[in-house]
Length: 202
Ligand SMILES: CC(C)(COP(=O)(O)OP(=O)(O)OC[C@H]1O[C@@H](n2cnc3c(N)ncnc32)[C@H](O)[C@@H]1OP(=O)(O)O)[C@@H](O)C(=O)NCCC(=O)NCCS
Image 1: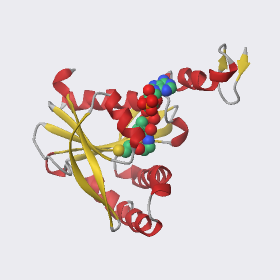
Image 2: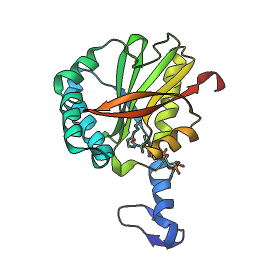
Image 3: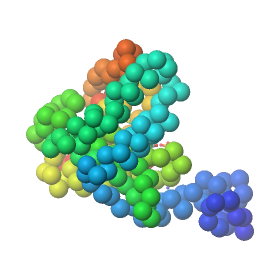
């Protein structure tokens, strides 16, 4: 019997045990989702910036990145997004602790496409310590159920072409690339893949 620090007991070989234990530990985590309101503004701003910086700071020009985050995660900007009737933010919680969040857009709030029967997953971020353990898959199951309840036919998203891990994750979850669009981090023009999941296949 091998015990991994900060992980549950595991009966598997020491070599693979950390991965396997975190599989059982996190994939058994029960998540609840709560739609954000104005009272969540500070917390939402903080987690939005934190998860974005952790994910992308290292791969970007420092000046462009600084300009981008100052604008994208300004309190007023997030407040405006929260108050947009065509956008919804959700926190995902486990044992009252936020493990990640996502943002959905419909109608004219979508950053591309803007069809009535489509819904955009504009952001999906899981705190670094909880990544790679199946929570993203759980988030997407919930997101697809929201999209179906809203009678949408297509769930789509934009993902930076250099974010290989996320692209692989989306492909495994049934998303397919259908186009690209430019995305600016400061003055740096980057390319996002547009990927779609057809909800009719569920
Ligand atoms: C992209 C992201 C949302 C995916 O969520 P996640 O919880 O890490 O994803 P999952 O654990 O469900 O799946 C990711 C990988 O873990 C594997 N996996 C799935 N369930 C697993 C489990 N129970 N245990 C171990 N691994 C598991 C998957 O096979 C996948 O492997 P792959 O990388 O070889 O494809 C998350 O990693 C994240 O927030 N990344 C940083 C921000 C980001 O890039 N957001 C997207 C912007 S477009």
